[in-house]
Image 1 (cartoon, rainbow, N blue to C red):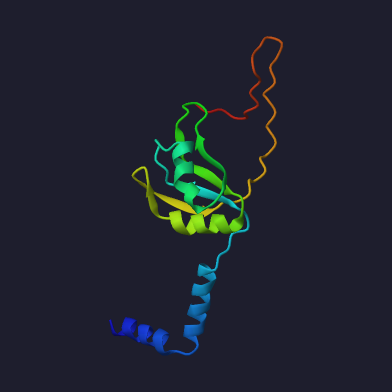
Image 2: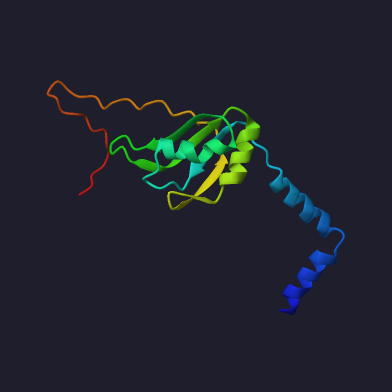
Length: 142
């Protein structure tokens, strides 16, 4: 217990530790967006594009509000992308909607990352004249 209070005292009173802690704190607060596109996670399965657009419209001019859905079921995957006309509007929306409730769920708003390139598709297994696919597995499992 004395050890922990000594560390607290050092961090509070030290002239070296305070500027370091302050600089790290200001770096976290001054994170600016580089694009007007936001990633919204933690969405309810009942959240639609219209509800998302309604929630994010007060912060500026929306270009797009798209809930990402599963191709097979058509249900929401629980995340979405929101695009504003300017970075300033996106910054206001991020500050205003992060950790807020939407459709009974707490949502999180972060800057959207650029899409990573997909690897090229793998070649299809070759079939023989009889219609069977050739299995190139070596070894025996059984």
